[in-house]
Each structure stands twice: as structure tokens, then as C-alpha cells.
Image (cartoon, rainbow, N blue to C red; front, side, top):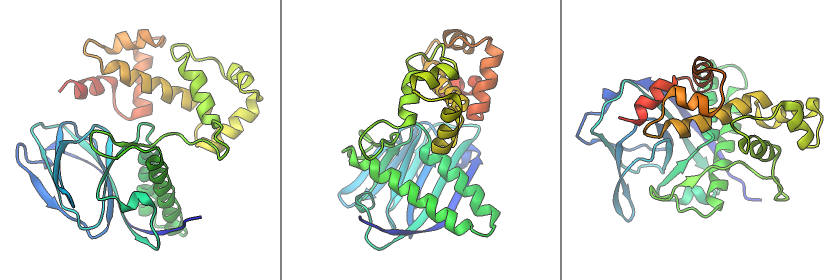
Length: 282
């Protein structure tokens, strides 16, 4: 089995005014002596990257991560302003033989289920707690992220802005679907009226207690939390439509009221459904 080692040097999370990007002009160049994996929740952001084949310019796909090798120059430009943006990044060094993903000149990665994002947010909290064992935990979490990236590459996507790598839910070594895959499939096909937990447990050929225990152990979430997350993911898709409103999407997904839908949306995402609509239409 191929093995490699990483050393985490910086984990950063910030929510800053959108005006940090000078409107209409290139900001940069930035260049880091370490590997950099970064996320910027800013719509309409143009990127220019100096790759071995020449400079590449493109509009950053919404919700994407960029993986920059050491000493690669890149610039950013926007023609829009936002109230605030979330920035996440982790910088690290690789020791020993590196996986194929870390032999790329540059890669764009989509993380639709926030598997990497959740990990980096946790890493930020752990890094700043500075309690005994933090360095070991950060090391393990960085290996987890590296594994997600390497597995995303194995699906054959080129990792370009037009065809990014996609972090997907895992399957077990036999190729069978994981519990998360099967659970998501059952809920998604009835997303407007998800079945109760005892029905899901029966269809998965498990007891309710076994489902709750295994699901929490394998995903870190409860089944109810996952159902809420899946419903909000569908809500985001519907809210992205031009004529969508909070009221219409709440009704389409059969929430008891727009108020309850708005509360669930904010609890899951940290922002309001109205703010999400406004961001999509700017």
C-alpha cells in the first residue's frame, strides 16, 4: 500500500467583508511555499493561475476548492461586492512518496456534501484549542482529506475548471453501497415526504436502535440530522430557480409552514433562505 505523510502548517477560517477584493482589478499574485487547499464562498470570482503549460484564466465554480502546489502564482478578480464571504484554507507539506493527486500542477475540486469543508472547519477549531493531542488529530484529519482527494481523482475527472474533481460518498471495499448511500437513496426518492425512521430501518433490514447506532458511528450524524440535510440540499436546488420563493419551496417540500422551513434551513446552513435567494440572483 502506498503511504505518505503530511504536516499541517496552517488552518484558516474567516468571514470577511466582500470588499477585500478590489472591484474590477486583479488581486495578487499570491504564492505559498506549501501546498494550499482553499475555498472561497464568493460568486463571480475570476481566477488566473500560472501553470507549467501557461496561465489559465476562468470563473471560479461556485462552492469549489482549489488545490495549489507550492510556489504556484495565482490572482483573483471580481466585478461584484458581497456583504461577507467565507474563506477556508489549509496549508501543509508532504513528506515521502505522494499520491497522484499531489502530482498535479493545479486542481479544482467540488465538495457537494461538504465532506472536506466540514473537516477543515473542525480542524480550525481543534488547531485553536491547542489541547494535548491536537497535532495528532490534525494530522489524521489531513490524511482523511488527502484520501478524499485521491479517491475523487480515481473516478477519472480531469480536475479542470470545466470538469472538476468531485468528492463523492464512499463505497466499501467490496464495491457495495455504504449505509449512507442506501439511506440517502431511500430518503431522496421520497424527499417531499421522507419515511419515518422505523420504516427506513425496516427497508434497510435493521432495527431502529441498530440504524441509529451504526449511522452515527459511520457518519457522525443522526438519521434525523441527515434527513434534514438532504431536504435542505433539495431546497437549495429549488431556491436557485428564477421564480422560486421561500413560501413556494416550503410548500413544494411539504414543510408545515414557511416559518418552520426557514428555521430548519438556517439551522442546517447557518444562513437564511432569503439570504440564499439573494446571493443566487446577484
